Amino acid sequence: MKVIAVLPEGLEKEGANELIELGAKSVKVLLRSVSFEVDLKGLYRIHLNARLPFRFLREIAKFSCQCPESLYKRVQESCDWKKWLNPSQTFCVDVSGHNLGLPHSHYTALTVKNAIIDLQRKIWGHRSSVSLNEPEVSIHLHLSNGGASISFASSRRSLHRRGYRPAMGLAPLKENIAAGLIRMINWDSSMPLIDPLCGSGTLLIEAVNIALKFPIGLNKSYLFELWPDFDQQLWKIEQDRAIQAIDKTKKFPKIIGCEENKEIALQAKNNIAAAGLQDVIEIKNIHFNELFLPSQTGIIVCNPPYGKRIGTYEELCDLYQELGSFLKSRASGWHFWLLSGTPKLGRFLQMKAIKRFPISNGGIDCRWMHYPIN
Image (tube, rainbow, N blue to C red; front, side, top):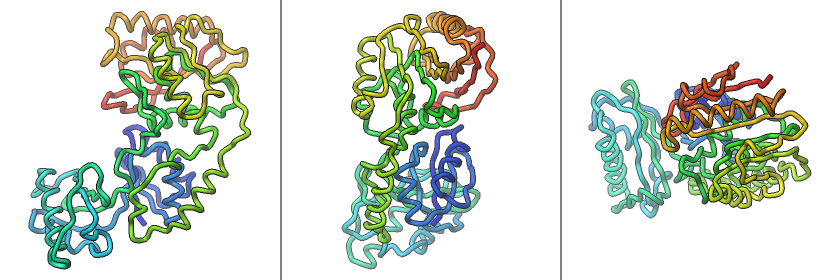
């Protein structure tokens, strides 16, 4: 089957690498997405282990259409709706992109909905109900260059939510973005990992879960479990394999997060406990200037405020200056990775980055920057 993985902008290449590692074939990098081919076993494995996608869309049909009338007809002909959507099931429709004769996503979605329910009435004499929040079948239509594709989403909600983070700071970093950033630094879990401004602790939690090979999709329910070709036995086999792959004997070096705000530090500790990692990650309720780094050199990661939602520019100038001084005086030989959302603040570090990767974080154009500390 052909599947689209929807990804954060800037992490498409890393998302493709992850999918290839998990067995995806014919992988193609697109804007904010990756297309690939996979069988059922691979689909289940990817849902259990892929950390970067927001969602997966299984493509069912492609066709040309230029107006509501042609869309209505093509949708009805696109697949065997008797198999995919029984009137007893609820459904929803969402639309991305546009064609010349189909410029409005809301009216385009209504056309798709009407095409389906009219066909159901013709076949069965009654129709499915629409459910925006808890659909049993989630239909996605994508329009582009006079063409359209119909896909079924494999989940109701974004897959970036892991379930360990009921407590979040004011500007939380999404879990899938954090996982992508950690993959990019090539941390091999043999060296210390420090976050001097750890907030909710997301970067550290994602790093440890990657090292443990913990299947982040293990305890989720998926819409593919309602698809007509769902294989319960195969799904159970892949779940068991994912559990067996967890490295339960792994020993970690020092993994430390600093958070000066007492309430946010407590939130980070609660998140870490919810992830079952309280024996691996240590949160210190101190300013990073009070931190003594381990003797073994390692990696420092940081997602400081950008001045968009937290902190004034003047306050952040001082923060970046302090951080730069701390790194140069205490962390010689370490490597520092910074997610920067305000380029002009970076100069207050008084350090030179050797790598810059563009990443979109919550709609903010950021750079994931690598500084070797001399």
